[in-house]
Picture 1 (cartoon, rainbow, N blue to C red):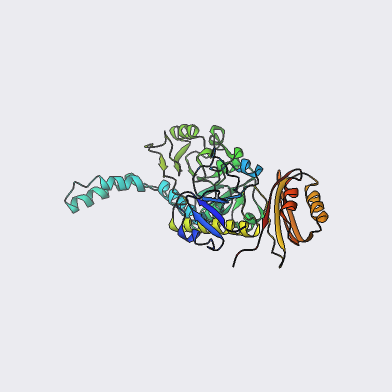
Picture 2 (picture 1 turned 45 degrees about the vertical axis):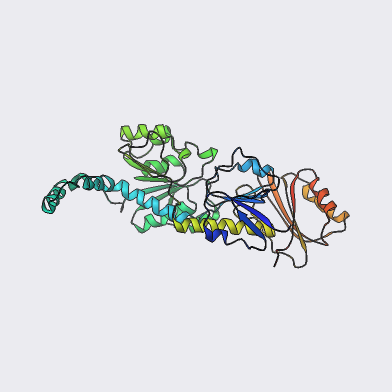
Length: 397
């Protein structure tokens, strides 16, 4: 492979684009036969997939704009950047809780409505009289329930504890890594309903997948503590909007704070809707772009996979003087053995290798010598259940 072509969608931070070594990469928004996409929110569903494409990196955590399963079947590795925007989202969640707890927004709107007054003394007296209309409560001592304890959820938990809140957590898919970074002061709940029933504030931090679609529905809201505040900085599909509106009307919910405006939510006196700005900070966009670019560089130049949403984590240090072969395959028995037989018949020695699987897919890295010729690579590609084969040559100097 000579130069890899990276096609960008959306505005990608320059700090991320600068991570691609110019000796090995061409990067641009107009790129024929690209080897990889680097994008943020651009939707790839329904778009034609070029034969050259081997990887997609999303500068952000959510990948619902990418047909992940379809790409996996084609051997296209999809990366995301978990944790890169976590602090930005955490800070906005905190702002959302404060806005819901106090009469900040209506108070500001009221103050702005006094723009025709010219007497400062008169204005001061009026404000002193009316300010009780905007009184609220403090977060200290309240209970925050966090649904989803990944990178963002764990940071929200830590900040809430620092503010004197009690924190409950529920995550049926809590990883060992996430458990280690989670404070032992967070009380783990066995199910969603028990968390909802005890929380003054509920903050959602789960991915948009089939299992989480409308997880906050009429049944769940019937179990929530009366007067609770619901915060959704995850995805709009996690919440049943109509059920939330009914809960607001009945008083079961006192506020709904979200980052996903939808028809029916706007101009509702109990809804605070933000325009999907959770990750929209300069720092977050740079962090996401740098992480996404670094993962593409390592995959294209070394075949290593980190933070993929459809393939397993597979990394291996290069063996000096060897040639690297990578291949993806359906996760069925015998595939690796058949590939090794092809190499043995061609008198190609395997110096080092690693094989990992994830669900229906598997991925392999093999360092070999001498280098395989095109005929050998073609034979490997035709082994039953092999999806895609790459010969990953050392990077240009």
